[in-house]
Length: 329
Image (cartoon, rainbow, N blue to C red):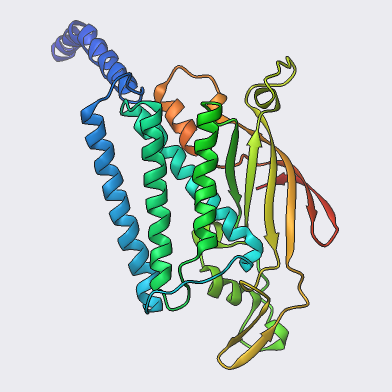
């Protein structure tokens, strides 16, 4: 071993205990950061408030420029869409308000707010986000302010709040699963140049994320619960993290109210394709019940726990058909 190597080795051995202490201190600080505060922490409150304000600003501006500015604005009006999309869009509003309430409540508790204070924040922020969408819809040329949508928003926020007040926990969680749907590239009714996939792109947008996040034919919304926890029973054979889930979705939707539309003065009629409601029974994993000593992992599990874990499922639809899925997304 050379003299330089020996000196480096001796220095490394000398400083190793200090390096280990610094790493351990960083790990402790990292763990402490993700642990909810027992008392009100003003620094965390400013951080969370700044993040919420930045998120709301980016959300509002992005939504306006990406959607409403292109479609045109008109005088504020109301729009009754309670029959649209077989109410899958209403299930989406319930889910959105619910998971936003969940996130804000957890963020407020992380700041050290008391439970009743965190509930006020969770309802206020989630309904602010959702109401912003409805107000923008009210000025949109193609839509309008929808009271059914607002009612669904209130149901979602109320579903979270009610469980917190009654159980002080979320025994029944609302979740989502979505997988891009394959649409045929065959021409619609032998009209050249316009396919089923083109129609889906017109309605929901193209690309993976648009398909997964906007396509009402691809989305399923779930109520997920643990029977043992829900009924306050202790069943040794039933794991704490294993849930039962009931899902709702739809298929055959090529329009909001029906499968008939006009494009470039051509009438397209797909009313022979049934617009079917879909009901599912499946299993799920409650990630928040997975035991870990890491506050970071606990936070991560809570964040992604709004997504239904893929599992076998039994489907019944409104056309009277049953179908089994080995793995449903």
